[in-house]
Length: 210
Image 1 (tube, rainbow, N blue to C red):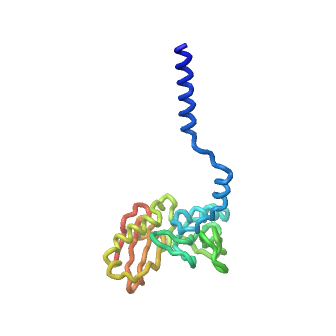
Image 2 (cartoon, one colour):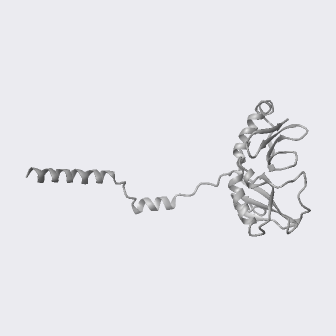
């Protein structure tokens, strides 16, 4: 009798705990509220986030393409900051096709010139790799644009404090013979009145500052 009573008590306790541990089920009203909730506005993205959709699109053009350049672009109504942009542009070139194409990735459309997602430009003649424009290997593209911006802004902090009106005018990834790896190039102001920083895209180290 004692064992039977104890078993009933323990069984009831287990059921009670099981009932307490179950999360509340969403009602149809909750589902309707979530479905009706408006999606937030699109937000600027880092270069790598935009680069891979463009890279995959380029693979449908040719398999021997190389990356020559990745650059930040603007979409009216959005603010590029801290290494994130509303649009990025990548230049791919094909030795077999002897041409290059410019691809863009935008988070939103702005007619008539900007379309959301990946857009492919027309092919243009390309004479091949030069010392000033060398291929960027994906394996060397380790440092994303937000990390590169942070490193560059830290390097330029003193100058930026003295020149708060100078805006970032150039933000791009490239490669040249004189560098050991691809570099991020950031320019505030102009070449005659500005500050430039180069960030190693493989390590994140500062390569050159004005």
